[in-house]
Image (cartoon, rainbow, N blue to C red; front, side):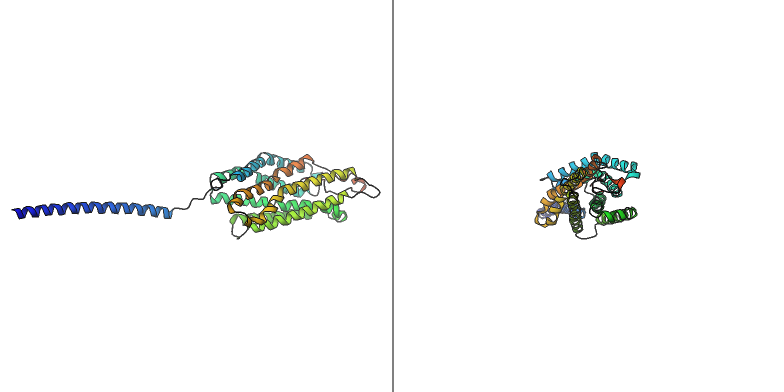
Length: 328
């Protein structure tokens, strides 16, 4: 009897131990499966890209300065450039040789000035690849505004420094060809920047802006030197030349103001800390460059037709077409 009771107690203990071990095993399996599920989910999750606002939260001054200038472009640059288009269309019969390039530049600037709302979304809220690709295309278009500006400077340089050759090339067919070639280069550059398949593509922009800046400064300095020369038998500059000289000097100052910051800073990118360059230098430099989309048409509108040829009826010219159009 005692032996039977001991067997029953042993069986009960064994059954209790087995149930306890089974419950513990179930808990361990459940816990491990949960951990495994969490780890699998984290491993398979796509890393979330940070917006510029998040990555530059500690130093937001750069991109906030840039956004302010971009919304100035939206509110001021779009109507100003549309007015430039209207004025060029209205004065078709009396337009200058540079107007074809000024027109292309105004169209390009209108396209770029419409981008700030999408930029705001991309910089502060969404860091999606398709949004960035769209912006990269229009950034590429804006980068190539230097090509049209260089054409304008070249046209004026020829008018002042080589007036005979300029008169022989007065026919505008070659200017149309040049404008089409500039648009071809612009679209090729913008598409290449958009698809992002060329390594170190930013070096192409650095080389382009250095070359264009040097060329524009050379053309305008040469024009200023030519306009500063007094005519034969005169000690003072002709009043018309004086006005033209002041206008070209303003144009040169605006070119330096808009394009010197990226020219001076971008070639030395490797000497800046990555976060300093990405959050400060990049946006400050491009802010100065991009505000040209508003400054250039306003300058054109302020002095719509500053002529330096008051003696056209006699076939002479006091300074060529250098300051006839004042858009930079």
